[in-house]
Length: 115
Ligand code: 5GP
Ligand code: ZN
Image 1 (cartoon, rainbow, N blue to C red):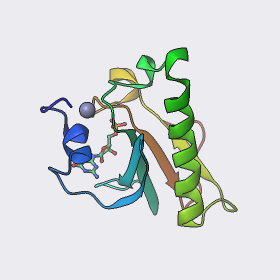
Image 2: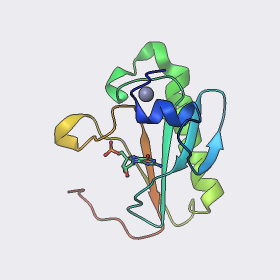
Image 3: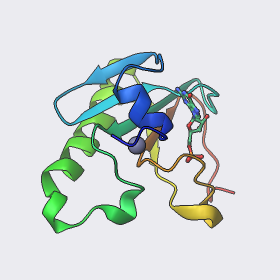
Image 4: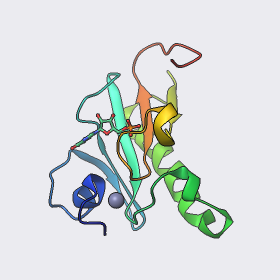
């Protein structure tokens, strides 16, 4: 774990979070500043800076992240109404926490394209 990484500290339980899903590879918890009625972050337990660090060697982790995002949508009851899965990489995309995370957003009509 990177001790200076906010999300590693959430994985370690050093910082509390409102967890909605967990398995051996990933955890999911509610965003502290939700941008939609449902706003959950899905993160790997292992530190990776962003999705740019995910490659063919990480196929099972990539699948675990997608599986968790879908499971969050099921648990939140938004599969029928729809949901958006977004991940930001780097400064132009607005990434503000340097530990890979998928945003699962739902519960309102989303605009497209994103800003
Ligand atoms: P990014 O901007 O990197 O794509 O997304 C980072 C997200 O992490 C933001 O939506 C922000 O609200 C959320 N966030 C930042 N600090 C915390 C925290 O301490 N706890 C939780 N649950 N979410 C956080
Ligand atoms: Zn980390």
